Image 1 (cartoon, helix red, strand yellow):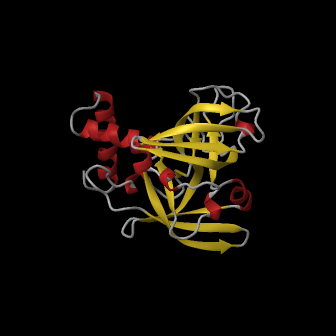
Image 2 (tube, rainbow, N blue to C red):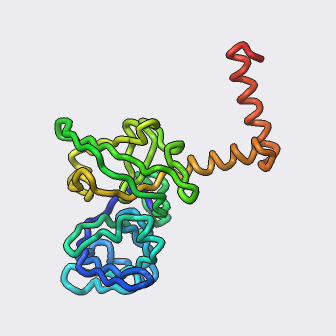
Length: 236
């Protein structure tokens, strides 16, 4: 589990591809390697990856992660090149303060930046989501104004949503712009998207209850809510 609060920016120094996926070497990473072990999870641009090798004694520190084809297909990590900066966050510990939102670092899909507009010291970004497919249903039901979303692993607040245009926007304050890669990405670039998992759980629970597959308590609660709404509307 992660918080979406980026700890450090690393630098891709090697990309080794094979038929099963690819290995990334990420340097300039010593601040997040102080308590690192082989097999630890590190979110790289919002994707939870397993450390396969590391050296915190080398200048700047570096670690390696392996990406399966599924990860390459669902994220933008296959587009990373030597020299690219990436957002890094270690898995959260039980003792840390929780400042972002619950982020699994399981990327749902990618979106495309379609507009960048300065707003004083802030930066407003607009994104377009791909058309849904049977394998990847629409994420729009989980994207609501003032709700949470993780973009390249960064916990951000949604400022606008247009369901018809399949777009949504966020705003980055000056401090955030300096700490993450998103503010440097141009129009046309892809970003990794993970919607708030709380919305997914709520939808599944409600759907199960309405179809008769949920608990009696949940079904009764939903029925009471519907009855209250109908009563207020003067229908019931």
